[in-house]
Each structure stands twice: as C-alpha cells, then as structure tokens.
Image 1 (tube, rainbow, N blue to C red):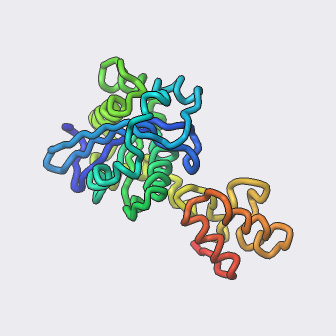
Image 2 (image 1 turned 135 degrees about the horizontal axis):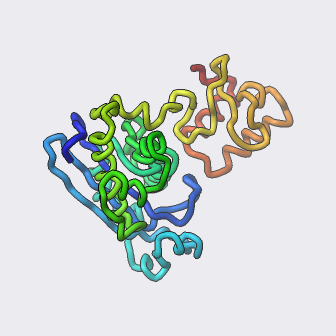
Length: 261
C-alpha cells in the first residue's frame, strides 16, 4: 500500500456465507489480510464447515458446495488462527459495515470468543465507492486499479481486490483523508444514530431508543415496555437469536432501565 497511512494494524477481510442474515447465517469461507503500520502483512484463507447445508442460492453466488466444506474445520476450530489476526486492528472490507462485520461478530460470539470488535474502525470501501462512484467490487477494481477481477467471490481474492481498491481510492481523490480515524466517518456517517451495532434501535430526537424493525417499528422502547400487549414482544425477543447486546437492552428495559443518548 502506498497511500493509506496506518497507525494501527488494518485487517481487510471478506466472507462467503450461507446467506445474508447476519445473525442466523454462517461463514463458509474467510479471507483476511492484516497490514501492519510498517507495511508488513499476513494473509489467511480457509474454508469453513458451517454445520448446516449451504442453500443452492448461496452456492450460485460463491460456488462453494456442501462437498467442499464437509471435511473442513468449524469456525470455532479456527479461532486460534483468526483471533490473533483481528486483535488490536481496524477493519476494512466491501459492504463490511452492514454485512461482514455483524456476521463475523455473530460467529465469534457463537464460538465463545471474547474478542471485542466494537471499537475497531471499519473502512468500508463500498461506502467510499458508492459515495464517489456508485457500482460494485468488480467495477471498483476496474475503475480504481485498472484490472479485471478474475476470481470474484473467492474470499481471499475479494479481500485482496478490496485492499487495492481502498488504497487506490486515497490516491484518486484529493479530498479523501489517508488516516482511518478521519476516513471512518465517510464510511459510516450514520453510526452515531444507532443504539446498537446491529442497528435494531435508533435514537429519536428526544434521545430515546426507538425500534427500527417489526410490528413495533417507530415506537420507543419505553412505549413498548409500557403497553401490556406489546411487552410480550420484548419477552419474545429474549427467546430469539438476537445479539447479546440487544438482549441486554431488552432485559434492562423490562426492569425499567432505558438507554439514553
């Protein structure tokens, strides 16, 4: 890399998965590139047994079948290899803010990892690309790097291309900052509007947590808790596969404690 100026390690990563639900779907391939501030880098790629059949629609996208992953390790079995690469680093990816990071965090949680990625700045090259040139990764690679992405939907190939795109974007736009701290707000300008990382709650104008989904969308957490008919919705949430930070917010609300901005 010639243009990004790092003061912390940066991990560019890409996931191929069983689907697009960041809480319920699973990783079938992971590719990581950890770049140190001094320019050193380590690459890692592995197929992952998701512990469930891969839907045909997902295989159609990335080409990975049940036979490909049958004898591969589970995500939990790979923790000892993956965690050191992620530790202490910022993140980068393509659509990584809305998809890859939430799904990766869900897999880490299911595997019993205590690694906390909540403070990692996520440099989403797709956000920058769409901010400047709305297209997809293949077009971004062609536009910024002058190359064709011949192995699209191979996790390591996509992560490699994304890293090159991100670095080329810094060179292409004079008004883009080169340091991750200043670049991150461009990638996720709405981050401060949400109560939680999975964006199930948003702050309203009064600084109260408000639902962004389901039959109570638009209602505040306080309103839902106060309505006997809706209170059961919160109890239902505790039994579902929501993230642990969402469940903690719900438990507190049921006890009369509400988050404030």
